[in-house]
Image 1: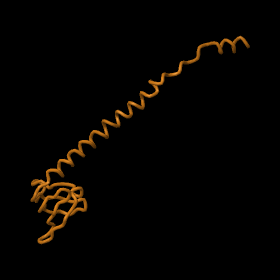
Image 2: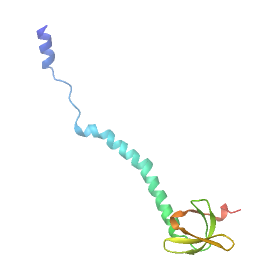
Image 3: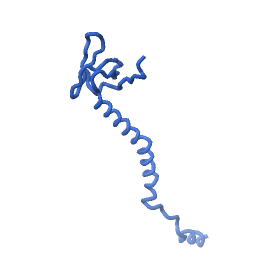
Image 4: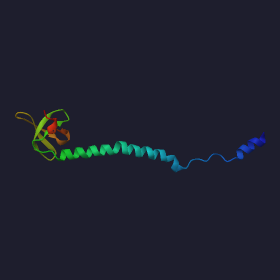
Length: 106
């Protein structure tokens, strides 16, 4: 019986995986996360920045609060919106969520 135990003890044990192969799944998860989440968000941020930079007088816009208005004046950080006859309100450009296109207007 001792011979069997001794023979089992002298057999080479299974090799441990290298440090690199242990990190491969983590690296793959990071790459999948980057391509599925980060890139589309970057494209959306770029499109929003361009939309805010291209705001001009007489654009019809929607604010984050759901107010529809027409831009009367564009300043560096804000816009003046006409939301009703003789009612102008100053909004931060960051509060504009979209410009209504002609196809959206009924």
